[in-house]
Length: 349
Image 1 (cartoon, one colour):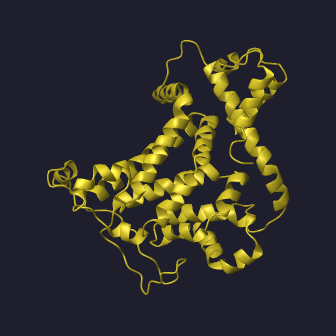
Image 2: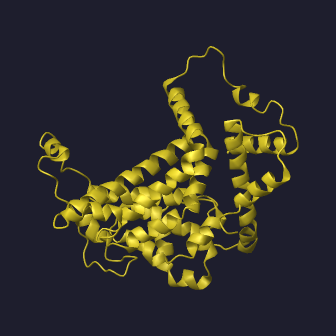
Image 3: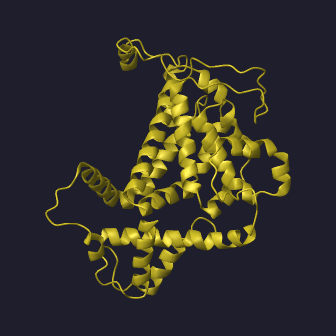
């Protein structure tokens, strides 16, 4: 919050023409001759990576999401990835390769978002904006729509006999030891009913790792953003509920937190028909002292203010990136300013 308001103050000064010594303000807390700690060195590396990738981050995210989309089609024979693995169609190699690809993509996005937020809140807002504008949320819904979570969770791909993990497992006593996620209790939020509680002892660690990363990232990019929550609430909730077929604490909590964000913008009929979901939110999500998510309040006013808030945060991101790259000119002509203003409204408001 301090970082965000500090950037807002600098932005307001620049808008009013008080742009003198804005760059000097960034170093006023740095001590000359101070030996940097290990944490400061890491943050400097994050800063360097961000400053060198600002112009290419949008393209990078696009490529990552296209790879994510191609890796979701487990049974498809279309596209470059499936054509490359066509000669292995009678084996489990294509499925395993795509599964590993999804795990890698989820890990890359998780690391980027996490470190950018640790470095500076505006860095996080920038990458989250790119992800949302690139329709990342649609890919997450498609991920659950195109496969059965229960089937994928229980599908353990064969490990190559001469592979690294197969050889490493022979030297590790903890390879098969884990905390298995229990299956569904008798009362569940999905159409599938489990007659008895059962513990799954053998499951795909890769599937849970990937699923948790995708859901966690979706939760982060919509948190507190009314305009994004409204768009997400228009998608079919049954698709996202498929993630809860198997009980796993991190998955359930993240999915319920997403629904908790959507509830204020759903009607009374929806709440009445989904009381089991509302009860699950109370049981599994952390509550706050002033938790009024179930009470609509002045929702109409919040919806009306959502577009202007989204535009404001995008303008702040643009100001931060320009100042970081030292590309802010003293006077911009009218047409340049008009084009940049239009670029902040690309997401369809």
